[in-house]
Image (tube, rainbow, N blue to C red):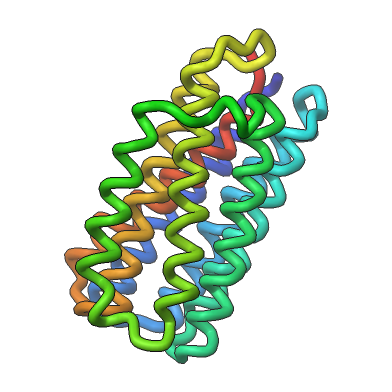
Length: 223
């Protein structure tokens, strides 16, 4: 495959991420919007380029759908209004479901349970206990969302552990890293939304999110 274009879209996403961090630090709403949309379009472009350049599969199509839904969620989160946050939460939930289905294309869900699943479950349980007093009427939505992202991480780990001839070790590592980074980034969003708003949380949360999406997008590439 001709690699310059995927590499270019990856770099473009990282440049936009840097602009987003500057915008968040200096409270520049226009730069914030432009950078966020640009970064999201870049990881969609990466996924699309890789999809067109490699043999088509159900896995790669579901991954691309997840990337598109993630970008839509990013746009919804540009607004500080509760209704848009809830809309973004719903779209991200659908994105996680797309990634879950993608993982199930490689390993049946019945084969996912393992001792490693305890790790994301434990982290999610601790986060939910800490967030619970701050969630109010959004408790149900947040519980559903947390369940979905935990299942996504468990699915990515199942793929990582399974012997799959059509999925390289590099792809497995990228998928697991991407799912874990996405999980971490959601903790940042939850803290900023329900507990406190600090730039330091965005300083680690935003890079975790976009690096996670880039890792997941790159799993479409088959060696």
